[in-house]
Length: 385
Image 1: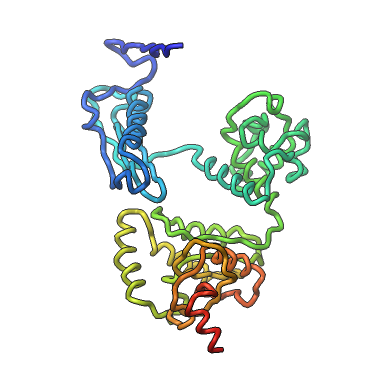
Image 2: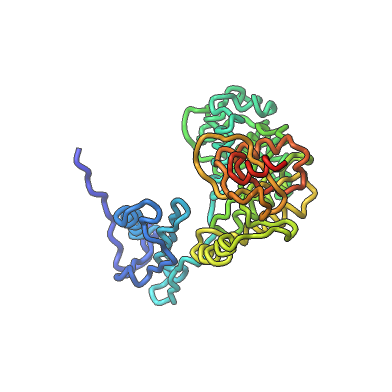
């Protein structure tokens, strides 16, 4: 069937708009700003695809439902769209036409809602990918107290697709209850679903984080090892925030194995080649300005790890290459040691070293710099010992 045009309700010549729409400026360019953007090809995209994405955002703004819109698209670490359109204030549906209007920018702060749901869902997906969680298992398998009031057969899949019938808590909770966590969890475990589970969808606006958080908490209970990649992404506090979260919430006594690059130093005794110095001091700073990589934040992340009293290991990786495993890499305490001269490790072997470190107590409170065991420098070291 041909697509029919959407009906449009014209504005009244006087009085407020019945749909509470904002007034659109004649020249949208006058209320559009852009931040630093990279060429679409740097992210494997075309200009046409980027334009299509932004056009969808502009169409949303044209609806008049929102006074402003910010859109940032990052793909493979490259920001291809960083734009804003509309007004930060002065063009609300009840603002008079002559009030001062302040355009929105890419740096205008906004109060946002439900952003943590995406993070919670990502964590759930990671737990499932690592075999810690099964979408088709009953929630009560992980959370036995949940099997009350008709919730015994609710599947994990239903819970995370907003079909469990627990869209709201059926009793009053205080701010102290929210901070304490367990009172809210107990209330959700005890209450009856608001509708027949899986019979329909209902946005779990105020409960999703509690439900997801408790299931993940139960699913990973007893895990005594944590592998963490301190990726130096060009996002504020990405690596340091990740490290701090692990240090704060990992079980006491858990083995924590972090990964980073050779440029990290623990005691200042590392000796770096001119290539690494250029990479860190020049390329690293330019990458930070472009919001692609933030090596300084990775340094801050490892500083926090080194200062903690946890059972940590920080694995410092050389350059990486693809290929079949060559075996467990060899390591040394300081970059610049002859055994590390080859500066190359198979990517799969880097991962193997991190996993092996979980059970190697000799590496607790060490920051081993690694290199492939079949590289020329590693073989030369082995021949001379």
